[in-house]
Amino acid sequence: MIRDITLGQYYPADSPVHRLDARVKITATMLYIVELFLVKNFAGFLIAAAALFAVIALSRVPLRFIFRGLTAVFLIIFFTLILNIFLTDGRVLWHWKFITITYEGVIRAAFMAIRLVLLIIGSSILTLTTKPIELTDGLEKLMSPLSKIGVPSHEIALMMTIALRFIPTLMEETDKIIKAQQARGADFESGNIIQRAKSLIPILVPLFISSFRIAQELALAMEARCYHGGKGRTRMNEIHFHRGDAVAAVLLIGFLAVIIASRQLGSVL
Amino acid sequence: MAFIEIKNLTVQFMKVNEDGSEVPGRKALDDISLEIEKGSFAAVVGMNGSGKSTLAKCLNGLILPTKGDVTVDSMNTRDESRLWDIRSRVGMVFQNPDNQIVSSIVEDDVAFGPENLGVEPAEIRRRVDDALRRVGMYEQRNKGAHMLSGGQKQRIAIAGAVAMRPECIIFDEPTAMLDPKGRESVMKIIKELNSEGITTILITHFMEEAAEAGRVIVMNAGRVLCDRTPARLFSDTEMIERAGLELPPFIELREKAGLPSDITDIEGLAAYMRR
Image (cartoon, rainbow over all chains, first blue to last red; front, side, top):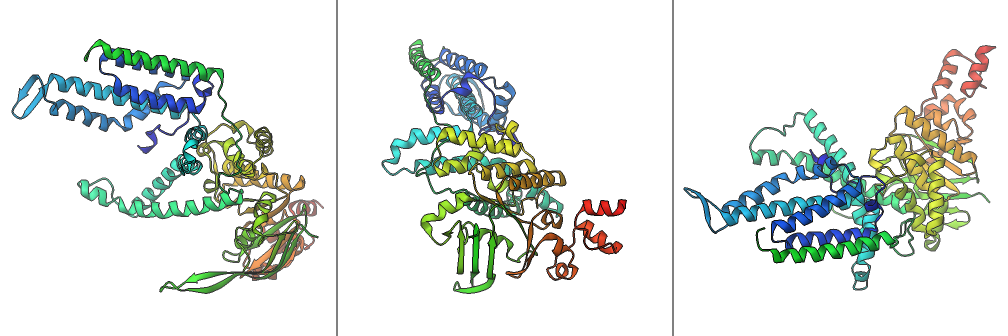
């Protein structure tokens, strides 16, 4: 169940997308998300989706890896759809007792769902094609101007590296605790929602304790390996801006222009 | 002068009472004096709580002495300005392979140490490739750390220490959580590193691993009970008993079969049986 989340899972491959500078990829992803909210008609979404699938094709990441991330957020998309369909005012399409479906509601729901799907696919492409360390290095570099005003950019980047690294470890730990509690007769499957939530306590408490233990051991291991903050630290893979990155940046600006132009086409099609 | 000198080392942790006041607790290490020669291979054995791990952590300044001194390559661990010099000379590999790997990708994790030392990027790349080849994990350099077996993870941890180009590596029960195959591969690497001149200190519960060392230091209740070659230790069953240890299987066989006590390894036993 929890294993299906692709966010933060790197897919090793040698592709033009993998080779891009992480800073370019992060900026592109952020711009892409902003653009998704600038789009106001289906033509725009078509362009955005086409661009996304072009990137997926270039990245050589198998489609099932990309769609696996979607199953985890299916519920959120589903609720967004429902709420938008039923709670938007406008031209009535269908009415039954207190339930009203409007034309605007359907359009808005469709837009929102497409937006969310593209947003999740877009951001999982970033994590699938960028090594976690490159991702955090890129963020550190992007944030480094902020360190002048006291933002601890190195520490934030390291925290993210470690968080990503320990997702699988903590999941294994959770699995172990669940099995241990089940072996003692704990029941996680029956009862109403409140009882089920309560039954999580015997999982969460040991998990919390063991994550503190892991943190302590890791801190010791890091100290033994001479970690003493970001000062004087070097990097094995320094980030360089290549020609491919310049091409990507130009394409990105072009894409941004097309999306903004698509707004002129009208509010639906 | 020996590479590591331990003089009258005492470590006493503070114990927190129920009312929050701190009082001195039991002595984890009690007046220990040892010398570790450059390039040697020493095993440290003893029951749980005998102070083995505490001793290991004193050797690179993770724990500072309450009394006495530890000097590494003539640098005192109390001297804070030399702490990073000491830790770059004395690497450490811990018991749990999962909790010492910092980065998700194998080669990035191996690079963590040299990066902390401020080594040039091209040189880090060379060291990482070299370290990964030495532990036989070069092919897996781009894999996710969570995809590896316990033995492979522990080899990555060893590569992480090797990439810092230390003169000494302390192994704190590196095989305790591994299956027999992983244990064997890790022991083979430890022996190889030692034969290449890296001073090796191996803390272990497995007597057959201790038998590989040049000397065995037996700890009991924070003190050194004895310090001798494996051959001499394993011919002294009374000492083994006293330290709460068990004999390696082939020594036990030797004792039970009443064979001469100058047989100290499996080869010797085989040679005796052939005669």
